[in-house]
Image 1 (cartoon, rainbow, N blue to C red):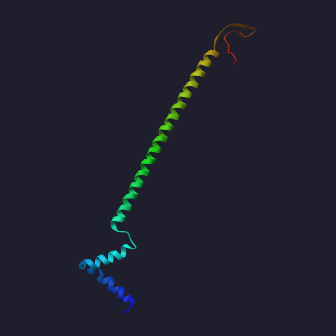
Image 2 (image 1 turned 135 degrees about the vertical axis):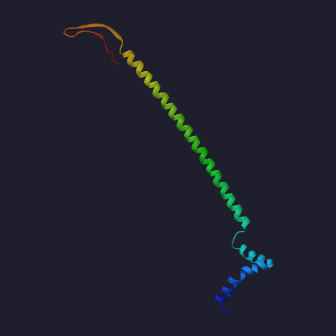
Length: 118
């Protein structure tokens, strides 16, 4: 019997032998555990990985919420400053347009308002 024919015979007969002979199945499983993790080890690894992904996602969500809150605070601060500057500019315009005594200018008539220079 050649190695190739032996492999073919094992492939053909092994499934039935594993179903029918529990001690042989345990022996084969023990041989494979040296090279491959068990189902429990694989599930533990998988659930650990899922937990790590969940924690990373939660951390990213917290960071995103913090960044959004900071951006909103910055936007509100800029809006407040804009309104302050706008109010100051309006107040300044009103002060620049103070009534002045009429000026008599030869050839131009009278002017009742004058701009104050800053």
